[in-house]
Length: 543
Ligand code: G6P
Ligand code: ZN
Image 1 (cartoon, helix red, strand yellow):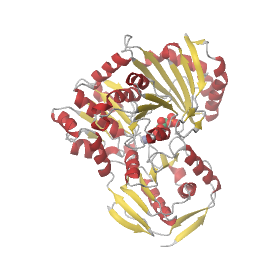
Image 2: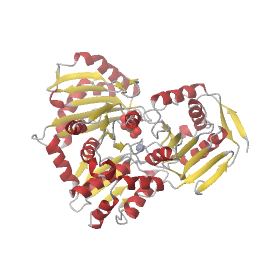
Image 3: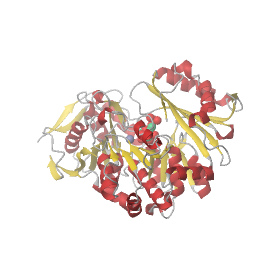
């Protein structure tokens, strides 16, 4: 087994976005593409020498092949140990937990999250650091810098190893440890939540459906919900991971998980339903007759987390990404705890969690999590909801209505304009940004603008500043429009328009969401000249 050094030239555009490097699968399959990026990662972190890495992914097409490449390269670069999920599988939160539990220096996680998988779909590779969280911007910029000047990569001249074989073996000088992807994660969940209470709930006939969307959470959900918590077989739907996610779109939202939404909207539907995405970090929460927006979910979880043993002492603070609705701010206010507003991207929560400033965090993009790992965690959110339902003995609808009656309701929706012309989208953003200073005081579509700015984040822990994180327009009465370009798309540009309107506890809390937001949507479309720049009048997706 010899170490070989191959000469290479930089690939263009190996720039990590919101969540690692995301490209079409065929781009990753170009000869040398993965190798150059992986070598750039090792170069950016001062080499792999003597280090331990966690390696795994969501099982999509090209997952296993990429893991073999990474293992050969880690060994050739002098890594001491690689901890790999059996068959190459690890959910993103489980990988985060393993990095922390095993004191690894980092992790290479293969996923394009909620994007479809397959040779003509998407692929991704992300580097996580020793706290278990996504690499901060300082590291991702260093990786990018390395990709632009790479001249060679190191690998081993050797056959593939068997990824199904649990236990330890050697690849060159490096130890390879293949682990059960579920076991450690399940133990962690058992520590945080009251499994007996949830078991009793299922025993009493509570019904649930969990849609794993043919992605990585299938084995996790079966082991935890069905085997440990006693939910009847059949509770987990689409529980077998497949390389193309059953040709589906593993994004747990009302569009892509429509069948599940339809199911809970029926009178005879399950009491509770949930879904997770390709790599298991996102979640969608549903109760009979109701879809819970991710922003509301964060607020409800913050208000009730103390009902789960892991948070019995209360929570230190909450954080949400800027475009996420301000529902959790009201809870934090009432509880007298801090609420932080960060840019989109889970990596921005890392410092706040490490410093103990926050316990829970969440994003409008179906991400919720806590300080138990450094990634968002789909199944964790489901279990926290189950724990709360079990203790309160109330339905999801009941819990949500009570919440609104106490704190008021932040009507909220995100409108996505997908695969729009990148230049047009950039023009839209720069034209609106230039107009921001003159907006306060003006009225559009009958709404008076109070404030308008470009969001910059000043990290209170390390003092770093992240600029250009989205345009915010606040209207009188607490309505808000936010615009930003997605950092995870793989085709053209995706314009995201986030709409919010606050209704106080004594107001009308039962308006249909899009109707409640129609005026804000009209105001934003006018302000940004939506049709002129994008040629679109209607969004492709409304969450
Ligand atoms: C990923 C990240 C999230 C982020 C989401 C949307 O899931 O982990 O932190 O909120 O992408 O990002 P985008 O840039 O596409 O709006
Ligand atoms: Zn994901």
